[in-house]
Length: 164
Picture 1 (tube, rainbow, N blue to C red):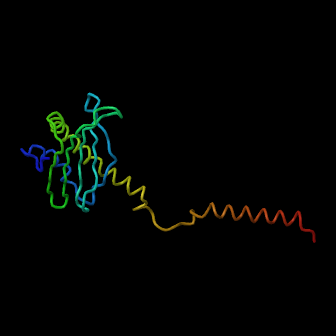
Picture 2 (tube, rainbow, N blue to C red):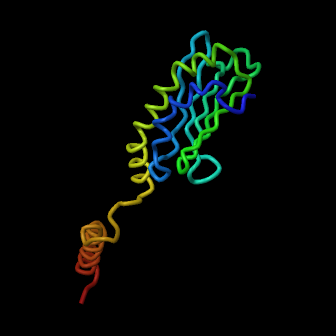
Picture 3 (tube, rainbow, N blue to C red):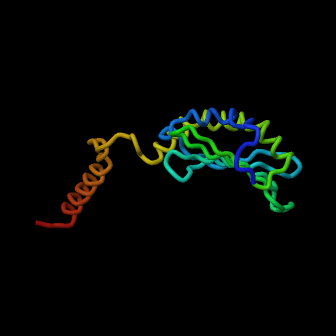
């Protein structure tokens, strides 16, 4: 396992992610990119150990259920969005995956940074944060319709079945 990017060539590719503010960055669902030869790269952008930390993890793995699961190469970048610090780690690195990461990391980082505003808005909408608060009279229209219908039924029932 390498604890740092040995030659510092990957740090500039991660600058779009380091430019994010902690409160503007949200985790994204994992996605996959084909590496060819029955392999894929699993891309994970998730929260780290504190509110300002984010993890970018790229994992080289078999694309299907079958395939050699041997040592799984993993590239992981831990970003501290508050202090703009960066730590890069490799696990079971192999030259082919390292080259692929070097070639594709700029576009991956740019894509993640580009979708952050939309992902944050979608997450806020799902959570109901920032939506209108309180209730209005129009929220109760379905209730009024049901009450009026029940009252009409009770009146009709009383007219037909209750004799004076």
